[in-house]
Picture 1 (tube, helix red, strand yellow):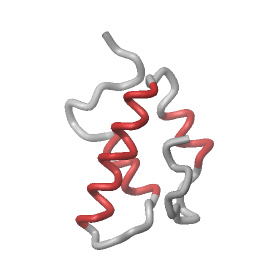
Picture 2 (tube, rainbow, N blue to C red):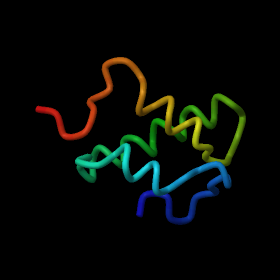
Picture 3 (cartoon, helix red, strand yellow):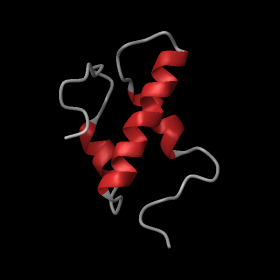
Length: 68
């Protein structure tokens, strides 16, 4: 839903992304896409790549799954 209308590289594995974000809320997913977009812009890219999502998900201090 949050990637609709966005350019996504063939490296993006939606199955892997879904598994890594199991338990994320809608707000968590929206934030993930926004942070990945920032990383893409830093790479001077207008295309989301799997590496952008991995960096966000694996960043220190990032809440994993639906931790409370």
